[in-house]
Image 1: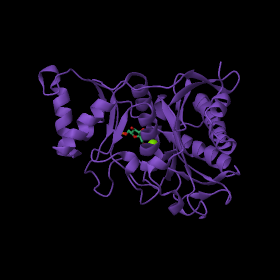
Image 2: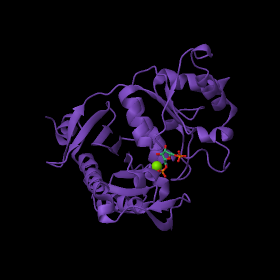
Image 3: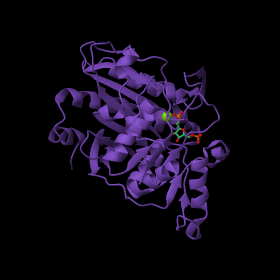
Image 4: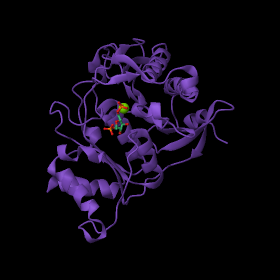
Amino acid sequence: MKRLDQILANGGVNAELELVIKDILVACKDINYKLRQGDLAGILGSTEDENIQGETQKMLDVISNDLLKDTLVTNPYVRGVGSEEEDYTIAANSDGKYLVTFDPLDGSSNIDVNLSVGTIFSILEAQNNQPGNNQEVFLQNGRKQVVAGYVLYGPSALLVLTTGSGVNLFTLDTNIGEFILTKQAIQIPVDTAEFAINMSNQRFWEPEMKQYIDDCLKGETGPLGKRYNMRWVASMVAEVHRILIRGGVFMYPYDNRDPSKAGKLRLMYEGNPMSMIVEQAGGASSTGRMDIMDVTPKGIHDRVPVILGSKNEVEKIVGYHKK
Ligand code: AHM
Ligand code: MG
């Protein structure tokens, strides 16, 4: 039985970074506990507030955000934090080397119907002496990430983590409160016949994406020559996890509902960490026109079109965008 701290120590992760990762996970264990309590603790449902993205916040969005934020701002090695649920980045310790960004509870439309949600996180190194409440210090592309991970709150609570040398999966043993290694060096199958996309947005997509999905739907007699299956959980963490385990592609592409937004998902809380995990597991990720991790952020809440998963299928979809 291997515990997370043993894996981190053997993987050459320095003690400071290890403490940052552990603090994130202290908060995630607490989020897991709160989710299991649900209605017993009276914490389902929405608040009356909206976040900076214009989305109504669920009570558990706010609780999860506060747990992560309050834990991390007191960590001596954290310079600042950026959250999907915060308008601005927050300063922690001015001597801290690390920056943490997170989506505290992704897929939160699933909370009230008791389906899977997750926490997504990413760690960068601060590149200059600016304090953490200056968003400029965060504006680095995804290749600079030193850690990416998520915790999936499903039937089990699972941690998927990469520190840049492969992807490991841990299962939370709630009896001892520890994440235990349950799968090592995950590799995503390179081929797939399973896609995940919200089809109700089809009329807003670019022609390239419409064409790819049309061709999938034509099945074995169409140009792609195989019968596709479709899934949509509306929880990116759950979709990415399915892809890690059995392959597939996940897409939240560019759409023209609001031309000021390049898609729904956020680069620094969703696109980049999930891209690092997927690439470290042998998969690929793209906006359709470039690798997600090569996109330079202009603002902490930037959005990005997302296509990620099994390598050969992602390359096929990128090929449609080149035609
Ligand atoms: P959230 O961070 O506000 O929860 O939004 C992100 C989620 C993703 O987990 C999921 O892929 C997507 O939004 C679902 O969107 P839709 O409701 O359009 O299907
Ligand atoms: Mg999200």
